Length: 113
Image (cartoon, rainbow, N blue to C red):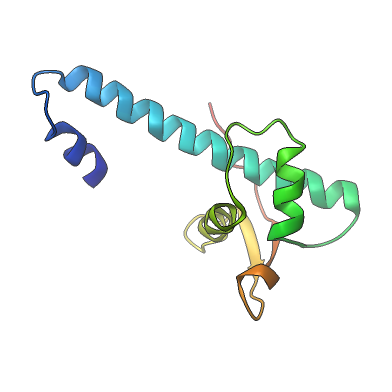
């Protein structure tokens, strides 16, 4: 919501509807990306027959999956961390000694209507 407030406080003023639509589009794209990554983790683990995967393997699989947008490995790691938060519950995380050794596993789908 703070991002929307910031958006509405920027000139040109009087274009609130356009600004809100732009904000909604940005949020939709963010949710679609997270849904895609959640599905990617599920499919990658099912196809490989393993229980968890590292960010680099998942990042490599991401680019073979017709991704909705380009992201770098550190950004993907941040999204995987977000999706593995106890508040979201879409992925699980086995914390490694550094961010590159974290492993992630599937818990539940992030569905988009």
